[in-house]
Amino acid sequence: MVLSRRWIAPLVVAAWTLGGLALSYYDRPLSDALWVMLGALWAVYWLGAVLVIAGLIYLVRRHRAPRGTRWNIAAMLLLAPTLWLSFRPLAAAGDDAQFERRFARLAPRYEAIAAQLERGGSIPSDGEVRGVPFVIDRGPPVRVAFPQPGGILDNWEGVIYDPSGVVRAARGWTFAQGRQDFSAPMAVRRLFGGDLVQCEPVRDDFYRCWFT
Image (tube, rainbow, N blue to C red; front, side, top):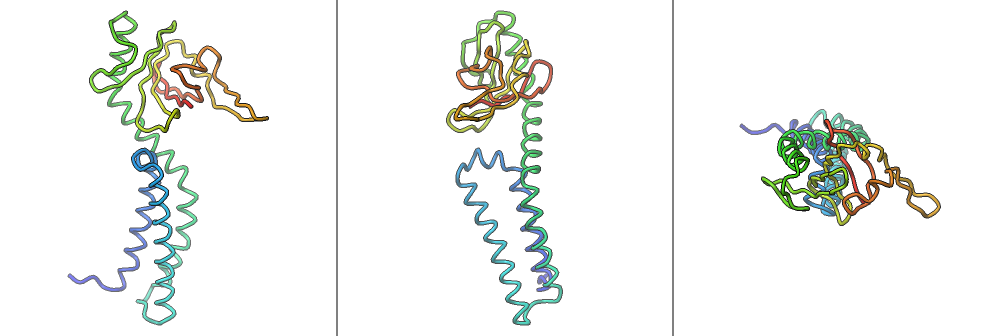
């Protein structure tokens, strides 16, 4: 079946919109996989929008556009700022959803490693068990970090097992008068060899934490 010309522009607009939503929702894993190339991908995406709008306007001015093309132009002009403004909430929602799925899948392994440590089991300071990498801080109390995918240089994310709950106090950092001020208590500020920036409760004694 031959696609009618009048449906080409609406399909292009729909594909462009869905592509933008997908890029936003999967921004975190794409950033981990592509690094700086993700910025190039976004540049191509927005350049494509400019070219499509310019092409549709050209066809309208030349009286060669199918009926309804003006509506497609208006739709893209309205969708562009909407997609731009929705990027952050969509990226955050996607990041949270992907973390929750990963945690639900790996939680039994996290719990088994933590339980073995608390029983005094013979586990090395750093290692991997059943495909789960971990780093141990002997404390007391004993804490375990399970590094998550991604991270650049000394900026990384981990699921932290902390039975004391002290890491919960890490709520971010400020940079004033040329000095970094971290909210994490001194007892955990340099935990696992990094600067603890922020932690969020996940379940029981597990926290999602960011380091720099």
